[in-house]
Image (cartoon, rainbow, N blue to C red; front, side, top):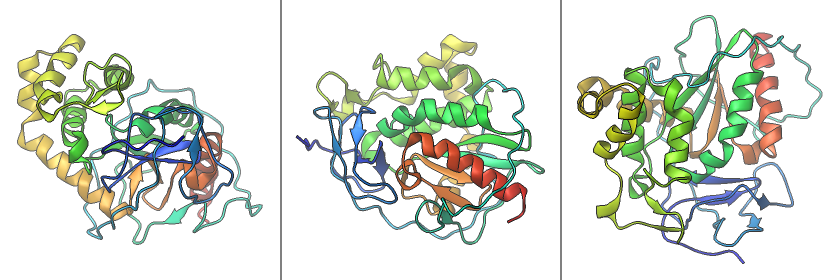
Length: 293
């Protein structure tokens, strides 16, 4: 049966999407089923306490920031994939499977088509979607680049701390070494989890991981904890966090994970129809942009 827990996210289609609204929640598992694709309502799940009822997203802001420097590619460079020709056979429908971002936002890699995941290490849906994002990154042609935008809109789940840790790691050029390990530290080992993973409940706020705890984790990857903390609390990282928040609002993002193509289109796994369809839709939108359609 569907189980309600305090805080967190909603299970949609093959994905538990983490929303702006602090609705019902619990650590999510990838085993979620639904009867329809498109933009569904709440789905049911086959695993107890692994999914939650859908919540109503908060309205996104409309401020349009300058070009973002918040993206980073944590994966090792993949061999170039041949660009697919753009063919519109009517499978993907604007307003249903993907959504136009108006106005389109500036990108930070001139000459490349940016594919951006809006995510949080604290988002169980992002953890479930993580391997799919890795597949998306590996499937991109040479004219596209993978980016990541860390969200902070769930302070009730400690997301600002995870966002700060990401941008500090980015500033220290550690994301490539630590991106996968951070998801594991939050959702496998629990080293940096805001949740009691065994009970499926949030820890008391006093027991939440702090940026100092994150610094100890990153100290295993070539920096001192003191150096990491200093960068994490710097003006530069504060600025990156603010830009990320502004850009997410300009994209109209209402939940994580959300995929954004070249600052122009956005979609979620639920609107695409599932995880595998997210890979296909990304490739199609990249081809659409390359063809200037």
